[in-house]
Amino acid sequence: MKILVLNSGSSSIKFQMLDMATKETLIKGLVERIGLEESLISWKSGGEKYKKTMHFPGHKEGLAAVLDILKDRDHGVISDFNEIDAVGHRYVHGGEIYKDSAVVTEEDIAALEGLNHLAPLHNPHNLVGVRAMLELIPRVPNVIVFDTSFHSRMPEKAYMFALPYELYEKYGIRRYGFHGTSHHYVALEAASMINKPFEKSKIITCHMGNGTSFSAVQNGHSVDTSLGFSTMCGIPMGTRAGDFDPGILTHLLNTGDFTSDDLHDLIYKKSGMLGVSGISSDMRDIEQKAWNEKDKRAQLALDLVHYHAKKYIGAYLSVMNGADALVFTAGIGENGWETREEICSDMEFLGIQIDREKNKVRGKRVDISAPGSRVKVLVIPTNEELMIAEETLSLTQNR
Ligand code: ADP
Image (tube, rainbow, N blue to C red; front, side):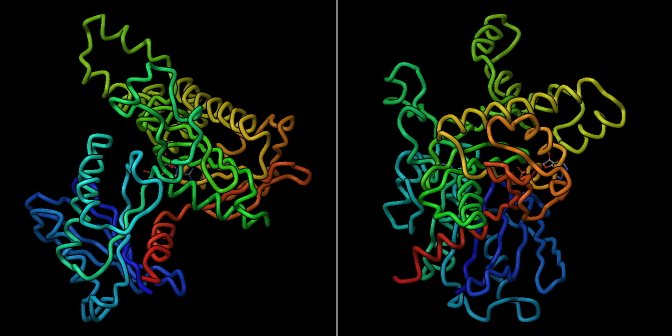
């Protein structure tokens, strides 16, 4: 079984083809600069890297080039499009309609259009990718795998905000959560690492990359998560503020010094580690400044990330009445052992103790718990493409 996984963004498309018998990636690559004069397609297969400059006026042309490369006589991985068993699309927002992944039908296209307003920077591009594949290889089934659906069974008390109820009814204002594919993947893997059935486990998953979200995963579902209606709240991120008092926004608006667009930029693009440090949104830059140059604001940015991360772990331990495992994943979670050490320090009372030596790894799957830690602390590199491919396979293999 060969599954093609696509992640269509505004001007780029990430692609990857997996052989599901071996879970091996046969080819992966990136289409960039769609719509510009010089577009670019780069890919890796058979251990070799390739690159081509072309012109892709739109996503359809970019995807047609991807299909050509898959079938290329010299370095392709299929000889006929019939060898593609299904296409799995990463899809950001499933709203309240999609509680699970789905095989795309005609009716879905209209339903998906109706969700564009919930994620205007992502969903429309995801949909363009789906439409293009339906046109290019109409016989191959397309599956949509949503970032939100793993959180779709959160209890009402976790997804509702204490705002006037009409806002939920009229505008769909509620917590949806994101990074669901990653939380789902690492939680499943964690349950298997600690030998517990996923459906009977309590796991806290910490996805820490440029965007960060933590989830409380109980009995196989996310029961709470730190990102909400938007991708802004929770733990401070590279450029996003995370939790802060929303009264600040109306206060700033009333000063007359800011438009609503300014405030949007402020909290999404100019806050988080970048805003506090004034240096960078990248964890490695901040750590370098804080540790090597003793920069106070860089240190404050780190302190804010660690502190909020601890608070969320405490909250999720109380929500689930404990946890079997705490998992770190994504760029910072997988590689930043210093971050993991800071977050997990002074947590013995809550049953969390790490082995400082075992923790000193980057990008490896490892149990870093100290002997006697009631909560197992794990590092698990995320693999959203594999998770999307697994979902795609399970929905299409017996059709
Ligand atoms: P995205 O959310 O864009 O997929 P990633 O998951 O790749 O992002 O995470 C990017 C973050 O991971 C950056 O802040 C980067 O500094 C951090 N990171 C990557 N490698 C390391 C490392 N060795 N130590 C600390 N942080 C790291």
